[in-house]
Amino acid sequence: MLALRRFLCVSVLLGMGCKTDRELYDDRLKALSDQDGDGYRPEDGDCNDNDPSIHPGMEEVCGEPNQAPVDENCDGQINLDAIDIQVW
Image (spheres, rainbow, N blue to C red):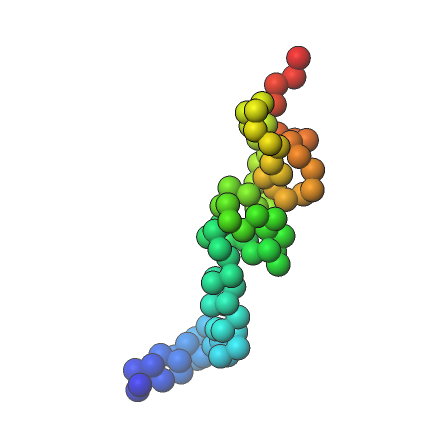
């Protein structure tokens, strides 16, 4: 316990700051509520928190012709700026 208290005091003196219990709780809750581990939660705009390849900022891909279209970057539009699109 003394070592922890000493670390906290040094952290404050060095300007590293300390997190409150609420901030630590919020950080842990955020980590737990990201079901697919991609760093985005539904609250952050992740439209499919069961698939790590679908989240805001992800590049759109066209996919296979026999597959249902997927909105990889959660912008509400499907394959409009896909990186593998072929223009004829």
